Image 1 (cartoon, rainbow, N blue to C red):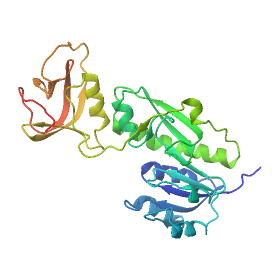
Image 2 (image 1 turned 135 degrees about the horizontal axis):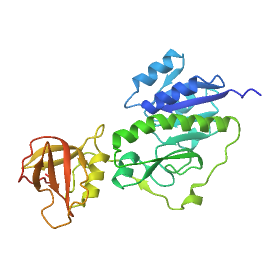
Image 3 (image 1 turned 135 degrees about the vertical axis):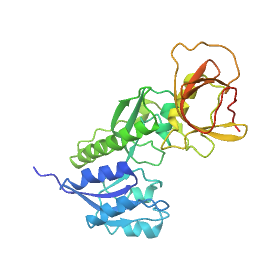
Image 4 (image 1 turned 90 degrees about the vertical axis):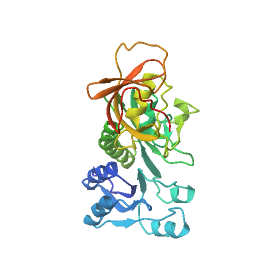
Length: 299
């Protein structure tokens, strides 16, 4: 039996949105009625992709305004899909599509709700990260789970590698969730059944990238890889001059001893050994001038 054509309103931004668009548009049983891009940072690539398929492009400073809701009601969309969109779907907009609103979130709900999840999982030394498709409700990433996949994290991973995995994995799981909805085969999982409290992460801002050297080596290592490219990169200062720390390595069997956190202990080829709270760490790539005896500080 041929699938009923499911009409979709697509609220999206970024590479994961581009990849998901490519998958959805190839399924002749799915119809994208419109693409809504972020207002402050309009995704020109996604806009062009929509225009090439004669799909309307929308944007608004407030998607919950009466004027914008009137625009949305002119379409026959049954499902709204959010992929890296940056506005809240309030009750009135959620009532428009008869199959609700779903969101693809690069976090293992009910843990890692909120913002900058791929940074936080590395900072917290997690051994896996999740990608979840869930229904949107009145809370922040609190809606019923449709699908969830998990992926391992190794010491070779950085913010960049997790982003690359998510760019590929998010479109796949999103498409699978859409098809379950289309076929009326969704079996939701209540987030409260996993954990009634959950975990929230806040948005990272300027100066959050400054290293605290009085942490243990493992914490410093995780922090550096969590904010490296395409993030702002970890930052420290030598005599008031900014130093970017791009990559670092843990040193197996490094001795645990007291010292001055942030002290540049030795040059090791093109790398430097830096004292941490418990031992020391190897800085393998950096931008700035460092010499033995310097002290890396907050400012």
